[in-house]
Image 1 (cartoon, rainbow, N blue to C red):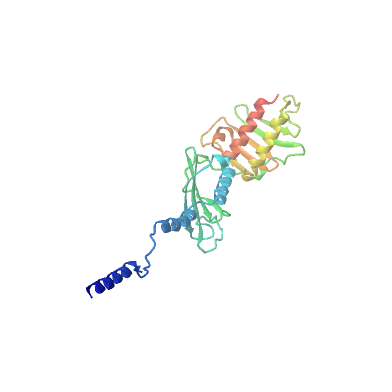
Image 2 (image 1 turned 90 degrees about the vertical axis):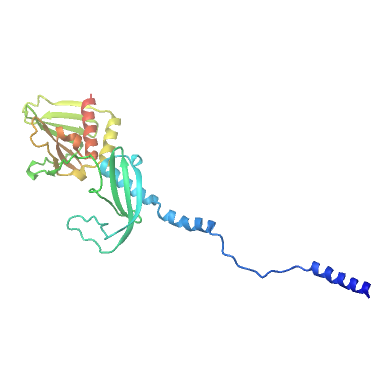
Length: 277
């Protein structure tokens, strides 16, 4: 009997050791490391300035200043909710829809100048916030309308550009015109004998470059405006320039304070005057 009990006990132990214990399944929460990274990506993308908004801001500022878009750096951008359809910057007498507009606040820099823009979400509407911007383009030089009686006649056929200068010590008035064949003609107005007439020529390349500049920096934005000399100034020359797009007047001593697109046209014109043969 003792031997039989021992055999039975050994059999029981053998069966028990071959059994596999199955624990009940327990659902543990996922460790949120990768989950957080995925959740953060949408918010990072949402806070990234869309390329179309970047392009719209750069193009608008380039048109206003004459600075190439590639030289304008976007240094800050943040999502904003603007109070109305005018992005909180209404023009005088402008009607603004009274609805919140999702958009962007964009800061642009060039050298030591800073511009602040407000845009809608897509960049189809951009507005320069002049009060928040820090620029040095006009030095408080404020234009005023040229009296209608002082406007020169429109350009005649074949003339690309005209400059009428008057004043200075002598008080003489000269008219200089650039023809579409590159001829540069200068006459003294009021000279009955036409004794001071001069005819020179610029190269075809100079002519094309100047025409492209006039297309890019159109005088239409400054049409009918006069940029005067500072108060108390003396011995300055008043220059009235005209293209097919418009007429603008400025004092020569104030030309460095003109808006940059206009200043670039004046500088290019002065270079033509000095380099023509």
